[in-house]
Each structure stands twice: as C-alpha cells, then as structure tokens.
Length: 235
Image (cartoon, rainbow, N blue to C red; front, side, top):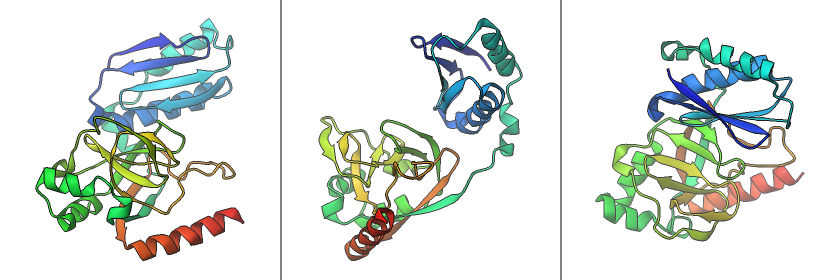
C-alpha cells in the first residue's frame, strides 16, 4: 500500500495512505497501534483517521534516526487480510430520543427520503455501527454503518449551536455531538449519555474500535436518564 509523509509544523506529521475509506479502519488502527508501541516514548498522540494517521510529538524530538524507525514500521505494516486480529474494545448501547423537540431535521429528512418516522427510526437503530475515529470536537464519534437509505448531505447553512447529545447524519456517517457546538449535520435525535467528561480517564466515552447500537426511547425516558446520568457524573 502506498503512502506519503508530510510535516505539519514542528510538532506533528501526517501519513496519507492510498486506501479506500471503507476499507481503512481495521488496517490503520493496527498501524497506529504499532507506531504507538514502538515509538511511544517520543510520541504525544497517534490519531488514525479514514485515510491518514497523524502523529503528534514534542517539537525537535523526532530525530532522523526516529524517522528511519518510522519508515521501517511502515515498510512492515500489517496487511488488510490480517485486520481480523484487531479486537473491538466493547459494544455500547446508546439510547436516543427521536421526538421532534430533539430532532429538528427528522421530519424534513423523512419527507426527503420518502420514509415514515417509524421506518426511519427502525433503519437507524438496526445496524451495529463502528467507531472509526474521534474528532471534530473532543469525544465526537464518527460512526460507520449507516444504511444507504438514510444517507443525507450536510445542511447548507450550519447551526451556530447544536445541543450536546444531538445525534446527526452527514453523508454516509452518523455521529453524536458531545457538547454544545456549531455544526452542520442533520439532527435526528438526542441521547442523554454524556460522551466527554474531563474528570474521567479516558474522558471520551467512546473510543475507536468500539461498536455502537442505538435504541429508541421516549421523551420521558430521555429526561429520566438525563437526570440520572447527570446526577451520577456530578458525584
């Protein structure tokens, strides 16, 4: 597999791989773990994405010898047919309320996709999604596995504020906003589960390699769970 290495200032490099995004997750996770294991003493963070891996390090510490070591790791990188050795850390069930007050774009999406609300929810809660990576904002999971019938483009004009816990769709992905932030994804529901808590270790509730299943809950259930989880995390 071909790749190219590019410096990002004096504290990071990014490795671009010539690989299809839908095939990349297991392989790039394995390569990232290899890099972490062999160069961990000089690396601050390794961040795999769809077709790249970014390596953050302390400025001036990545010597020519270490760059040669990185090149050797990449030369002996795992092959795609070995990706079954990557173990998913866990399966997580995320409750979502799809009621209108938490899903401002759901009705329009149903009309656009020629689906009833019940059909839409059934399709969205059916798959087992994979967390490919965390990004955009701390704790934001990019989830792969969305049924093609639900694929929808981002909003032409992003919202200035999307509420924490909002579940959205953008293209062939679904994701969850961990905190109040601007965003252009189509919002179809909200979960009471907090996805990023700074006092926890690790702070992100979901990690690359996790699998996620959504389950539909009522507005009453949402409020009860939100109150319970907020109280528990404050103690």
